[in-house]
Each structure stands twice: as structure tokens, then as C-alpha cells.
Length: 199
Image 1: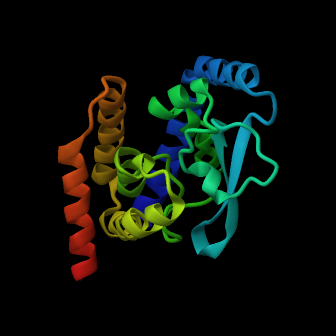
Image 2: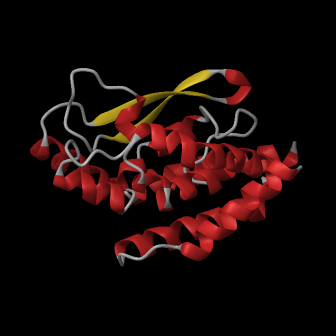
Image 3: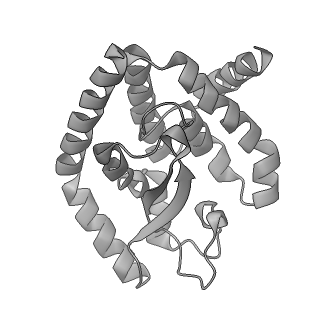
């Protein structure tokens, strides 16, 4: 209970500071999207949150508007991602609207913990999952490990693990900006997922 209270306060303060501190990036993101492809600024995806309650996850739109937009729109599609979209995905600017979910405490990563901007599952997807463009291939190669990593976070959730994920997120972004891949981190997540499956 103590951890949950501290985490909620910590998440709220960090989300508020994050929104204020990154507000120039929000402006750049909104203008860039509207110039690249006029239409909705945000992409919303339905997710299941804490206590199995559905919530809307917000991201900056990085793909051209399609008549039938589905969950598959979160997967990279070279034909639909506009140039500015590639950029905001690479540096994770498209994830910034999720700070709104954190601010209001809606959602989670595995239906047992509060919503967060990052975590082992999200980082695994960022490092490896985003390279898989085919939805079927993604579900076969990425989703099972990502699912196990969601439970890994539930098991390891704590102040120090949260701080570790914050550091890992920054490191991932720096690697991406430099055009490199965090292979060591990817291997660590794969091992964590295996340990979760063995339990």
C-alpha cells in the first residue's frame, strides 16, 4: 500500500513536470503532424487497465489517415508513415501524450499496476518489436515475450525498479538517436521473460 501511494504521487508529479517540460516538443509535434498529413493529431487505442477497466491510450499520430484504422496502425508501415512520423517514433515523441494517462491515473501495463510511460515490455517493443512490420509476424515473434515482460514488471514493481526503467528509457532513446541498438538491454529483457515463463 505504501509503495502504491508513493508511486501514485511520484507518477503524478513526474507526469506534470514532464508535460510542462516537454511542452515545446508537444507544439513541434502537433505542427509537424498537421503539416505532414492534415487530420487528427492523436491516435487513440483501446487498452485494458487496472481492475480490467478499459481506457484510451493516447499517442501522437505518425501515420497517414486511413479510412479503416485498427490496432495494426501502431505497427510500422513504410507506406503510411510520413517522414515526420519516422522522426517522432525514433525519438519517442509520439509517446508523450501517454503522460496524460499517467497524470489522471488511468490504465496500466498488466491490469495490476498503475499506468506508466515505459517499462520492460514497452522498451522491448521499441528496441525489437518496431522492426517487425508484418502484424502476423509481430504476434508470433514479439507479442509472447512482450506479454511475459508485462508480468515481469508486475513482479518486480518497486521504486528502484521504476527508476531503473526511467534510466533505461533515456539510454534507449540516446541509442536510437545515434542509430544504434541496445542489444545488451534486449538480451536482458529476453532473459527476464524466460525467467517469468519458467516460474
